[in-house]
Image (cartoon, rainbow, N blue to C red; front, side):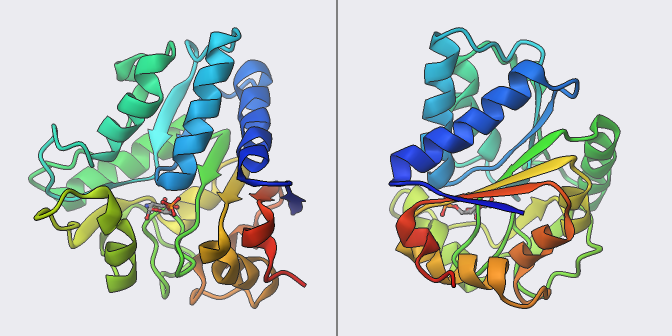
Amino acid sequence: MRIVVSDDPDSAVHQAADIVERFVSTSESRALGLATGRTMEGLFAGLVNRHRQGLSFRAVDAYLLDEYVGLDRCDPNVYRSVVHRLLARHVDLDDGSLHGPDPRASDTDAECARYEREVRDASIGLQILGIGSNGHIAFNEPGTPFDSVTRVVELSEQTRSDNARFFAAGHSVPAQAMTQGIATILAASELLLVAVGAGKASAVARAVEGPITDAVPASAIRMHSNVTVVLDPPAAQGLE
Ligand code: GLP
């Protein structure tokens, strides 16, 4: 595992964007796994800048890690809309090349099984990850078995409270989501985890230096042979 501690959040995002740019412009695989969340907003902005300097996403197929259950398809918090708004519509990534679970699927279990097959068939080349303050990756909450695949999950109170900042007053964070499992994520050829800010320090320290345990879902990335973790100094402050 490579750990990069950048000078500040902007540099962390810049270094993460370098890794994504290298993948998009040189890799044989064109299947890129995208995360969402505040950390990713900076990374997406960096990728949009690189597109303006010539980086093309035309050949890329992008796959979402997870999606809320039950939001209207036009809800701004639907992760597909988030990625469209912050990345896809500013670059040459077609809507048809953006893949994810359908938040309005009537049979969510069937939708998860369909998406698991889609992601496995695609063979993700580079999977970008954030980390939740409780150590989650995608929406795999503490206690998730490492052999888990795409499925419906109940969100923890911690995650719902962390993500409430994205929802307008009077709109609550859904109780459920569809998420790629830990095994699905680990099947990608390469992982890139990005974390900035002191709020992530404890989760990062437990993931990177604590026991590899399902109590800390992000610790599973240490079972992968090709992982880069990019941090800013506050997110790295708990590391030995
Ligand atoms: C959500 C996403 C995760 C992401 C996490 C951290 O819960 N499902 O994939 O890693 O948020 O996001 P933020 O960068 O906003 O802290």
